[in-house]
Length: 124
Image 1 (tube, rainbow, N blue to C red):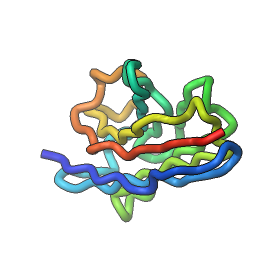
Image 2: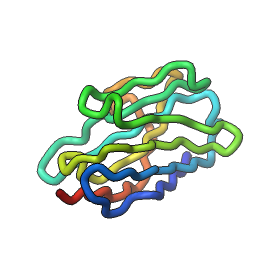
Image 3: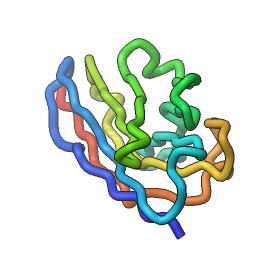
């Protein structure tokens, strides 16, 4: 069993920044890819960003590329999502996810464990 605890969400004005954190426990963090997803009201959960175990490879949704950055600290079993130039359409509950493999895929089904979610609200 893997536990994921997210933090860092909140209310911010458009153009502002937030940094999300997700700390894991229960399984070797450093050999698994990690991902961030988000879900807005009435919409399906969507991929935001992913990172390989060694941080060599990162992936981003087109909607956030150039504004968001995913990174990880394997010594702290923690993955981060730095979000800059936030837009109202970024408003959603953000979830970190623990992949069953070393590849950070975009499909929800590729992730075995999920955090509880943290709300990000961007006002215009």
